[in-house]
Image (cartoon, rainbow, N blue to C red):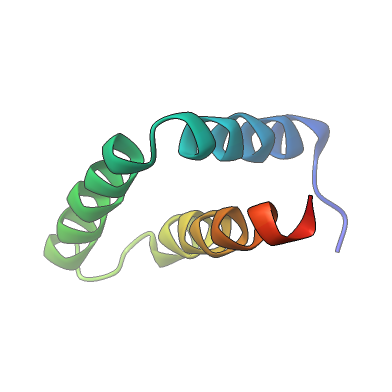
Amino acid sequence: MQLSHGFSALIHSFLTLMHDFPVAVDNFLTLVHNYMKKQQGAQTNFYLHLQLCHYFSKKLPQIK
């Protein structure tokens, strides 16, 4: 799957944020999750991407 350069940069920034501020990012994801539930999953793709970032950020320390 080919990601746009902007989206790759966004994911990279997001992973960096997660590494530096895990609690803040976790709270943010919870807020997004609750918002998405209210929106009846209108933008679930966006939330899925965030979940993937969250998953990989937990795997990253093992990869380095």
